[in-house]
Length: 120
Length: 116
Image (cartoon, rainbow over all chains, first blue to last red; front, top):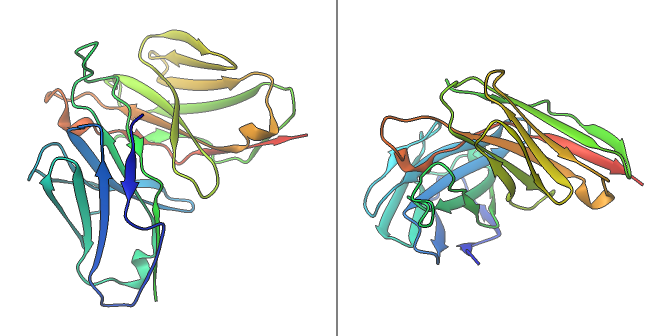
């Protein structure tokens, strides 16, 4: 089974702190993603990465940065946490190419359990 | 902006009935479509995906795709209270770069409530 783990289920930080959210997957997936999920706004993509040291901005990258030094690990960094970054953060991963069908279109994203971050 | 739209609900159905969840998408070139279920306080988990026009069945679940109408649906037969959750529809957009990191465009989700 694919396993995506996140470093914390619940996190409370203060405004202005630097916050690190860690995500690790154990299935050798090329692609990794960070989302935030807020009531009424659905899942919003913050950043994604399709290879080690590669990153692409998603829909809402402002106030965030990411790091991918190893294939299995993708970190989300809040440089200076603010109250409007209070949210549920979800990490996901997926294969580049479906290794049986040799097709990229069918690859699902597997989600971690999420980190509920509260910034006071 | 390439969008996926769903009615937020809540959709309420009695136990044993058929629940019908609908999704429309704006990118005509979208390649494949995914239905995720998300229980309250949990992360999304895949129910099924579909990429060809028509129906795809898996147990009590049937996904339907109509690319001409840009419409995807999920039917849940013999609904159970344990099916009560938010259902997310996602589309994989077409890209000249074959992968573009495997992005999915998610709808906001439909909340389903199955009453005993």
